[in-house]
Image (cartoon, rainbow, N blue to C red):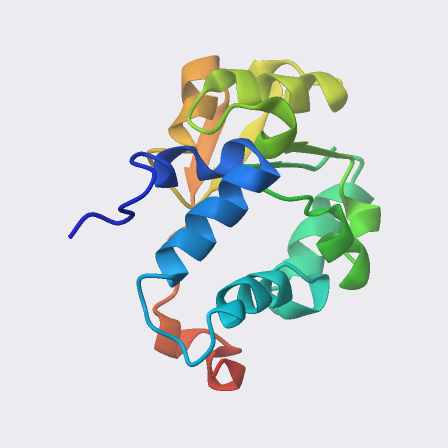
Length: 167
């Protein structure tokens, strides 16, 4: 079975806009029967609220430390929605100087054009930037631009500090 039956290829471009994201996620959800079809949209809407996101326990420290040392911090994300409210709700917004989000640019990682505006907004040359990312494929676009890249591997779900709260 393909990931999404209709329309073909939507999952690959899901983060180029808010409507593409909704269509891809609810289209995937609709492959699983639910007691009431309106639940697909309701579940998507709930997942999009800032409170539905839980930052890693060390997120504030990881973002705050370079910020306090005068090092600019930017968020570059392939995502079909605005992450700024998530950062505000969780107290992380003061540490981030810029957000470059795929849905606002109409391009996704690994396209180097998504990383370049973050460097510009931070007033940094690409050779002075370290991209920390969790996807060797997607975040490799920063390396193609000339940035140094450090990959962070995900913890297994069972080892994540908040995994017991996810039900």
